[in-house]
Image 1 (cartoon, rainbow, N blue to C red):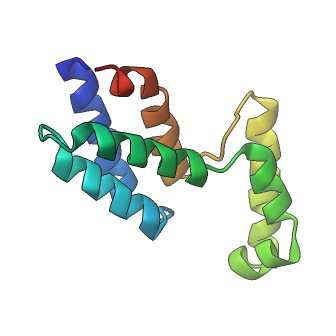
Image 2: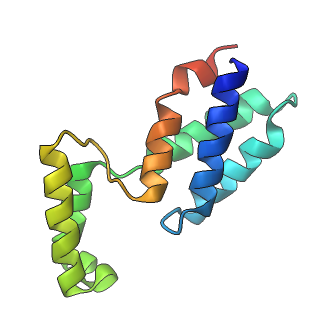
Length: 120
C-alpha cells in the first residue's frame, strides 16, 4: 500500500472514530488497526477492521426501512425519523448506496481502498 493511501485511510479512520454515529465495535476495530499500522499485526488487523466496516456500514435501503420502522421512530423521534427516511430516499435517488452519516461516509471511503489495503 502506498504512503498516500495509508495517510488517506488513517485520516478517514480518525474521522470514523470521531463520528458520533460510529458504533463502539467499529471504534475499537479502528483503534486496533491504527495501533497495528507498521507492525507485524497490521495485515491481520486490516482484515478485521475491514470486516467490521462491512458489517457496520448501513445500506441505503436498510436506513430507509429502519427510519420508517417503530424502532426508528423511537431512536430518532417520530418527526426526525420521517426526515431521515425522506433524506435517505433523496440521496438514494441521487445514486447513494449507503447511509451518508459521518460514520458510514468514512467507512465507505475506507472500503473504497479495500483492495489497496489488502495488497501485500
